[in-house]
Image 1 (cartoon, rainbow, N blue to C red):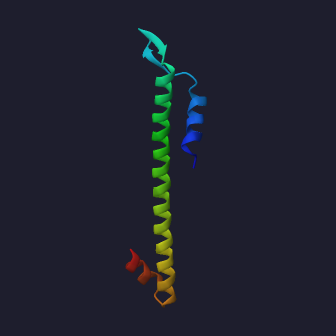
Image 2: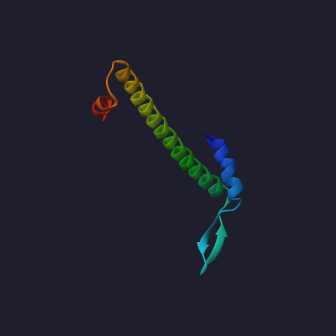
Image 3: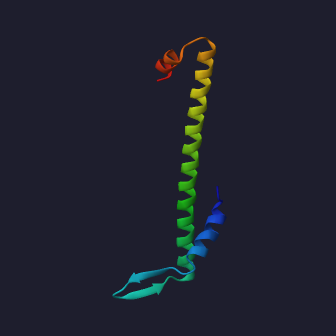
Length: 89
């Protein structure tokens, strides 16, 4: 997973200039302070989203490992696959 600093570099590369406006009134670039603030906010959002996804993947992997371990233990006790399935759901 990328660090916050790496994400900031990516965002600055992807968005060397940020502009606001519309086709009717025209587009104007944001000033340097606003640019840095917006990039920081977007980077933090992306970092947090990536962290949440990584956390969920770890929880899912841990659940799967626990279930597999339980299946192996129950099978070692002599239970059939049907019995193990009915116990573990």
